[in-house]
Image (cartoon, rainbow, N blue to C red; front, side, top):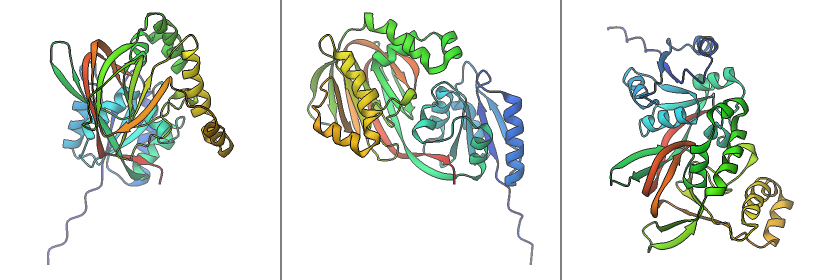
Length: 326
């Protein structure tokens, strides 16, 4: 009777942003973890100015990778996640950026490269949703992209477009505070028409509309407190500050009420006793269409994606598998 073939060892891949990572340190960490786990030699792929990670991730899948580590900022994570959509190949996060938004929302360790790499080889699989966005440009051209955390139009997109890259490198996410300060004086309400889950179209005037698969931002800010990455639902936040203290009310809602009070039973009881802040509107849906009166800057997971005149956003439930600590 012929002998059974020897099972092939599993193999990981790393898609890394050469600007964001300490490559030699990462290679040593991966080599130690793959040896300990008994996996084959890891495959390595660098992102480029022309490929944020989608194409090399497809190459990694074709080359037999069972897990793909995304080592870079939120843009690299988004690109790798987009390419892994519905493939069953796992995404592992090696946080190396400013926001590390998905890692924060999954409560993963942000400051241990060795721990993140070990999770890639020994962690458990968790299925999460993907947000999808079809962007229509002013010339009617359309682009489809995934987002893992948030997509937005208005203040957040303008903030990202105005963020100083040198300041961001020096002080991290605090550079966004500077950008917000420069965005507010020129920010005007955006008039839009929107429809949720096929309902009748409504009109609104907002400063920002954000569609989220997750709800937490750096600095303890909780924009959408009920958002969960695996509930099959998108959470939507519209910021519409009114009057001279409108932005103060928005900040109080996001930073104090959502970010602090909701973390304790006493705090939640205080929220229940206070009047709702109408300057921040939260709702949910699986499918959102909106069209703006004039094209506006649009962002996906913290990267600017140009001008959009309309957006169709929807959720793809359980479309991405992510490695988390076992």
